[in-house]
Every structure is written in C-alpha cells, then in structure tokens.
Length: 218
Image (cartoon, rainbow, N blue to C red; front, side):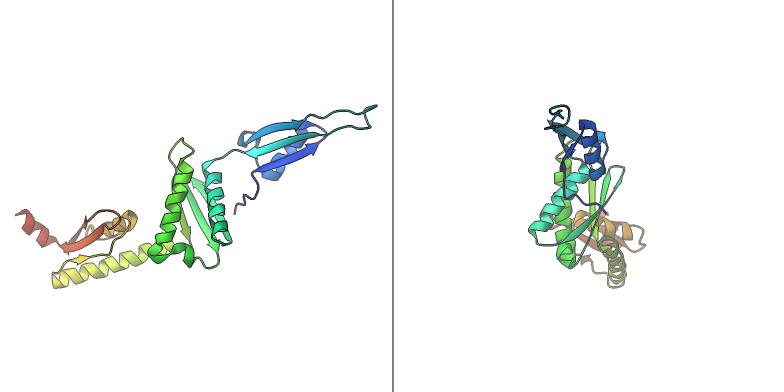
C-alpha cells in the first residue's frame, strides 16, 4: 500500500547533505527520484557557535506515472468525500491499481460504468506526462474477474438459447473490453458466431446462428 500525503519536504540539518538524507529517508526515495532545492546554506556564527544557522533544503518527488495516478485518485476521492486506500503495482508498461475501502459499489457503478470512467480519466492523467504509453487497469473487490466470469456464463447461456431457438440475440451496449470477452468466449462455439453493431458508446454484440452467416454469404 502506498501513501502520497506529501510530495514536498523541507528539512534542516547541520549540512546540506545531511538535510537531503533526512528528506530522502522520510520520502522513501533516492536522489534520482527527487528534485532538490537548497533554501539556506549553513553558516557559522560568532566563534563558530553563537548565531550559527543550519542548512535548509526542499526535496520534491519527481512526477512519475505511478505518483501521477495516485495523486489524481487521492484528489478525486477527497472531492467525493470517500476514504479509499490505493494499492499500485507496476508491471512492464501497465499500472495495476486496486482500490480498497467502504461502499465501493459507488465507485463500481452500474455494470462498472463509474469504475471504467475513473480508469479512463486516470489513464489520461498518467499519459499526459509523455514518454512511453502506460496502460492503466483499475479494480476493486475483484470486480473485473467477477464481471468476466459472469459475462462468460451469460454468453454460453445465450449461445445455447440461440442454437436451440434459431433466433439471434442482441446484448445491451457494452464497452470494448466486455465485447471482447463475449467474442472470445464464443469464438469456437459450434453453432453460433458473434459480431458487433452500432457506434460507440452504444455498440452491441450480436449472437446468431452460423448457418445465418453462411446463408448471407451465399
């Protein structure tokens, strides 16, 4: 679990190096991860004792895709009046973010719409930094896996119904990821095939008999 309550720390010490080390220790960072500004140089007072002045530094964590995502989500949940812990793991070019808290159904929304919107906005924020594109995946309470399992089960039930009745089925509008789940689930089905119709955000998956497709091509 990662907390990002402070991105900037001021530290004072007998020397600039000592003040920097204190700040790095508190931030849990190394020098290559921060920007350092020396606010005050140390100065010796009268006789090297009286009126002496410590060094003061300002150490700021550099913005990275990970910190940008966390900062954005913290601000969002603060505005929503929600207390949410943000767990982040980085794998190759993907940020995997897990949200933990109470009343997470609010964040998931209807059929995951709110969660998808948060994921989209976080991705925009992260990739404004430039550099290599970072894929952002946000989940909470294992919703993504549960939703995928539910879609797979529903797809198979619908396929069996279409195969039995001969009548095609049109799903409600879904996002690209959920449509891909249905297409992948039924791609090897012996009796039915799938295709998509409509424009975003109202694009839908259609399940129909394979014989219908052959008849259209004939």
